Length: 110
Image (cartoon, rainbow, N blue to C red; front, side, top):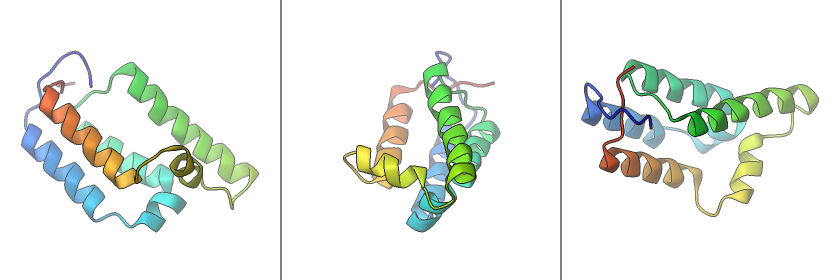
C-alpha cells in the first residue's frame, strides 16, 4: 500500500475484501479475471486505499495481459497460467496479502 497509512475504515475494507473473496467462485476468477480485478479496484477506491506503484503495475499488467490473451486466444486463461506459477491457492494468497497489509497499517486516504 501507499506510504501514507490512513484509511477511514480499515475494518470495513478488510470485511469488504474478505466477503468478496469468500463468495468468489474459482471459475469466475479463472474465466472473468478482469471483472474480478475491477471489482477489487472498486473496493480500493470506495475505501480510499491507494496502492504502491509496484502493486499498481502488477494489477494493470494483469489486466492488459488478460485483454490481449482474450483477443489472441479466447481459450487462454491468465489465472490458470498464474496459478501454475504460484505455489498456493489464489484465494489464500489474496487473503494472506490483505491480512499482512492490514497488520502493517500501511493504508492511505486518496
